[in-house]
Amino acid sequence: MKIAKAQSDDPAMRCKRGLLILLTTLCVGFWGFNFWQHTRQAPIRRHIQVGQDHLKAGLGAAAEAEWQLALHLDAQNVEAWELLGDYSATTENWHQAQRAFLQLSQLAPQTPRVWSRLAVASAHLNDESATRQAVEKALQQDANDIDALGLQATLLARDEKWEQQLEVLRRLGQLQPDNLKIAAQLADALTAAQKFEEARPLLAKIITGTPDFAPAYAMRAEGHLTANATAQQLNQAESDLRKSLSLGAEQEKARHLLAQLYVRRQQWPQAIIQYQELLNRHQDKTIYSSELASVYQKAGKRRQALAMRQRVALIAQRRDLYDVLKSRLANDPNNFENNLQMGLLLLRSPQPLHTDEYIGKAISLRPHDPRAKAAVRELETLYLKHLEDGLKALRQGNIKKADHEISRIMLLRPRDKRTIEAVQQVTQAATKATNQMNFLRQPVLAPS
Image (tube, rainbow, N blue to C red; front, side, top):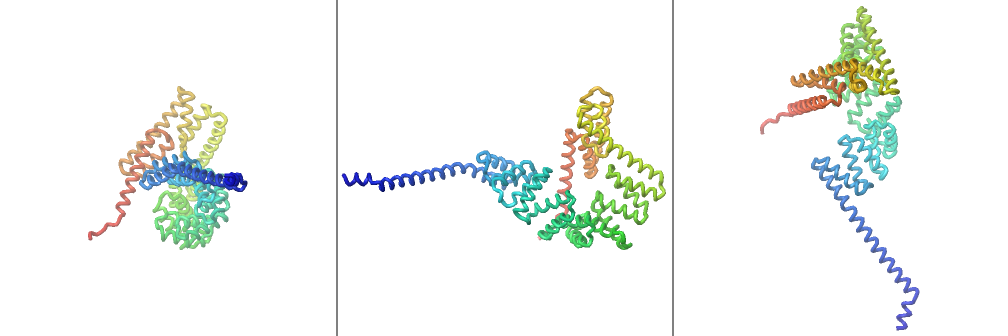
């Protein structure tokens, strides 16, 4: 008994027992923490997995809801933020995508392409500061990030750093030599820089790969329209420009170049036709009115030349008045006279965007004012004309004309219930026509 008591009082034994108790406690605590962590993570993992299953089944909204629940349980879950960000980008919910990728970049900044994905989302939101910062970090992470380089080229063009933009586009072309979209961007930049020799093989490649890409023909034509161009080069340019317009009559650059080509040849009637078409499509661009006035003068049509110069002066007056009214309304947004004048100015302009806001403001300020009532009637009359013309064209199957007319009512009254319904009808008709065209283009299989 004395020996056992002596051993129990031995300091070394007490130390061993204490160490054993400590190790046992640590093991139990570690096991308990792991069990708690596993218990906590289990529902989060379940939400993430169920969300992925939903996405595979085409249930995007349900998948998004599951990932939101996972983040509600763990706001620092990297996988959930990444899944939510990628899904938001595919649905073009750019605000949510930006928030998700911003969280991901803070929690796991080394995640592949996190910065370029954040940059893309920020660019779609016109958040230039965030885009620039994200592009810089993306290229630090991966100097060959395609999305980041593409955005960098856009930002350099915005900064008018043309040579640096060209270098970035050349690099993109080397990284993705088969990407015709990048080739087109590079060709366009080279053409703008008048580096026609470098652009020419790119344009040949684009035209071979996508022969219905209208801008490529216009760019190639511009390369032929040099100061010392031969008659053969001018003929080739005309052929390319006509080809471009046959593929897309809205090609503004091609039509302008063709008009200038006819001026160069002193083919005044042909030049006048092209300028008139440009003015029909771009009524607010004074450059075309000024150039057409010059063509009329050279063709001996002095009366028409004078009318064009008066048109230029009128557009300039309208722009000056717009600037004055904009400044006045910034200082006094509830001024009846300025709201009415701005509404009428826009209503009678080629781009009547926000017309209903200003006229609506004027009539709300003075509901019984005869001029305000007349402005509302004028707006409604013009609106109904475009709406009726658009719906009539839709019934006749002329989707292009219908789209043009409905675009006008979207400018006049974008929030009107009639506008929303008309837009839906045109969209459905265009989708149906596209599907029918794709069906007709499918190859017919011979019976086996």
